[in-house]
Structures are given as structure tokens and as C-alpha cells.
Length: 416
Image (cartoon, rainbow, N blue to C red; front, side):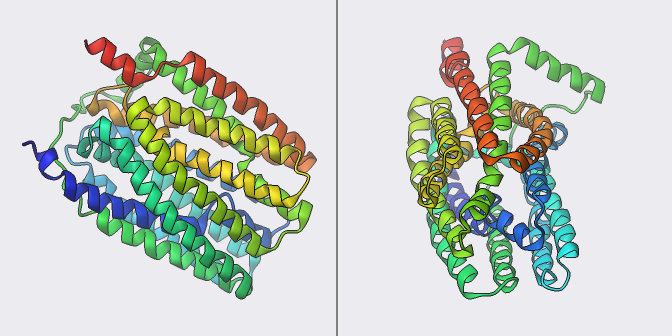
């Protein structure tokens, strides 16, 4: 019995608790619902909403290519995921809570502090991401990754749904900014607890890619990957279009507030709807991914986002926002369960950090610009913004479905 098989049950349990507690806490700082609401209390400008989308996308995606080179040369992924993670991912959320403390007295200072802390957290997550991906790829086989992450997200989103009820109650019962002090504090606590369980992972020894390349050779290697691996290149291009198409998601909550004057508590209920949908989607899409490949799960999630934008574009009644957020929950589930893992199947295990980093950093470059364009479109018309997002999402979905071959079946056919 291999070391991976001996530790499978232990690693499944501790990483299950890690994911469940992380996503429970993350629900209290949802960039789709809670954070836009917080910013709307500090300023009437839409620009900070766009900046949050830029920070969330670019911060997560852009650093991965640079940290991937370091990660591939380290035999133990926990050195980065745990050693760096406490300072880069957990500490900034505690600091974010301080911005809520001063929001009532100095909204502008609170906004600046919040944006700095959110940038710190997002960039830190991007730096740590390749090591975490490499760790999960090492401890779980391809046939078990989908069910592991699907089960983790099922429990995490399920407890997050309970947390969203707490969010709705806090937003209704407590005045601003006390409600957000509580929300950010709860998020920081549970995301820190998740770090403790991640640290308990028993990581097997693994292969490393010798760090013998200088940066010039490294960039040439990246270009070689894009040039020679046609299927991977097509996947990256399709996800770039999908990423640009998603630029309007951060404005859906603001459109609901401005068009229908919904209450703060309603935003909490939107989060609940999104998490319930995400909970079911995690389990179903994770099961599907193990049996039919991750590409199908990604396609389903992208199509759900397309329908969400179409509904938002013609929104006749505020109650339909619950349908929109249910569809966005499916999209989030597919992105978490399969959006990351599908990239891992384009390459050999030691190259997971670089392949994931290259795909994500490419998306991040476009993620820097897209939300700023979305801000200008939103200032003109939410209907126009959501319509353009729907068209781009449709194009990205079609490219993914008809242009990209499921990498698992392609690799298995090649290996025969």
C-alpha cells in the first residue's frame, strides 16, 4: 500500500473540514453580495465596485504563474500553503474587520483600508494557490478529486447557507457598521480555523521540477506549452472569453439595490439562495466530473451564468433575482469543483502548478481590464452591461463545448 493510500482517509477528513470551514467563513465576505453592499454604504460611486472585481480576479489569477515556478521546485507544498498562507490569506481578513470599525466615523478611510486589505488577501491567495493545487493533486487521484472537492463544497456551501441566514439576521437586526464588523469577524475566525486543519494534511513526498531554468528559459517554456499543446491553448482562449463575460456579476446586487430599493436583509437572502444552489451543484457536479470529466461540469456552470445574465438584462420583478443567484451558485460550484481541476488533467502531475498558473494568469490579465469596462457600461445602462456579458458568455461556452476536447479522455487515448 502506497503512502498516498495509507493516508487517504486522514487527508480526506482534514481537507474536508478545511474546505467546509473556509467556505463557511467566505460566505460572510461574498464578493457578489456582501462586499458590494458594504461599499454602497461608504460611497455612491460604482468605481469601487469595479475595483473589487478587478482585485478579486487579477489578485487570484495574476500571481500564480510567478509562484508556480517556485512551487514546482519544492518537494513539500505545505511549506507555501501553510507557512505563507497564514500571513497572505488569513491575516488580511482580520485587518479587513478594522475597516468596518471605522466605517461610521470615516467612510473614505474605511473604504481605502478595505480595498488595501482585500488586495492583500486576493494577491496572497493567488500566490499560495499553485501550492494548494499541487498539494491536492498529490494526495488525491484524478478519479477521486471531483468527489472530494464536490463533497467538501457540498458541506461548505451547506453550512454557508446557514451562515447566510445569520448574515441576513445581522444585516436586519444590527445597524451599520456593527453588522459588518460581525460579518467580517466571523469570516476571519472560520477561515483561520480552516488553516489549522489544512496544516494537518499528511503530504507524501513528490517529484519536483529542478529549478535550473532562468526566467528567460522559463518564459520560452511557457510559450512552447501554448504553441505545442493545441487543446490546452484552446481551453485557455475559451476561458479568457468566459472571464471577460463574467465582468458584470459584481454589479447584479447593485442593480437590484438601485432599481428596486431592496433591503440589506434581502441581500443576505440572495446569498442564502446562491449558497443553497451551490451546495446542490457541488455534489452533483463533483459526481459528474469523476465519471464524465471536468469539462462537462464547467460547461454547465458557464451556461448557467449565461441564463443569469439574460434574466438580469430584462429583470421585470425583484423576486427573479433569487433565480439569478441560484444560477450563479451553479456557476460558482462548477468553477470551484471543475474549473481548477480540469487544468490539472492537461499535464503530468509535477507540472500542475505551471499549467494552472499559466491558464489563470492569462485570465487574470484580462480580468484587470474587464471590470473597469463593466463599470462604464453600468454607469450607462445595467441592461447593456448584462447583454454584452451574455453575448461573451455564449461565445466562451460555444468555444469550450465544441472546440476543446475533454483532456482526461484525450490523455487516456494517448497513453494506450
